[in-house]
Amino acid sequence: MKVFVTHAEGDEPLARQVLRALEQAGLEVWDDEREIYPSDNWAKVTGQALEEAEALVVLLTPKALDSTRVLRDIDFALVNGRFKNRVIPVLVGLDQSIAMERVPWILRHLKVVTMPAVGRQEEDIECITHALKAVA
Image (cartoon, rainbow, N blue to C red; front, side, top):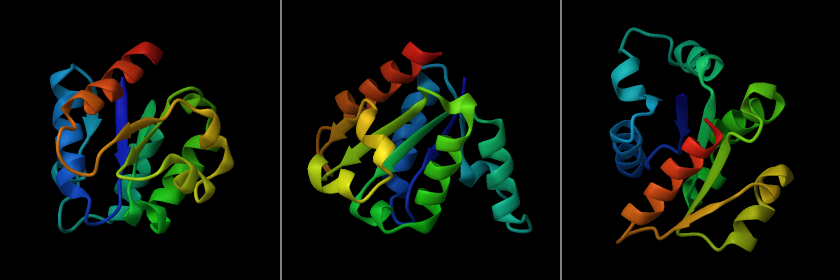
């Protein structure tokens, strides 16, 4: 399964951690650091990666709630039938009720993974992997 992990600018360390764990679990992930070169049109390359993805993991941090790019990626997945039951919202250091007021309403009806902003995130990242494998 090809997985796209969307995150806000500044949340790259967390995204790297999630990407590594998903790859170690045998999932194919798109990594912007490896896939986008300085001369590339990043919007075009990213759009193509979304087109090819079969699942979307959304890292919802305080920065992500204000990120146009993250919201655009969510919108893309929600209108694309191939992502049905394959959008995994991950609340990172956020209260679920507050966060869900600020994201598309449909995410409130999906299984949400909650993890702390710092500290022991390994178990929660493993929950992301299990959720993706369950819909594969």
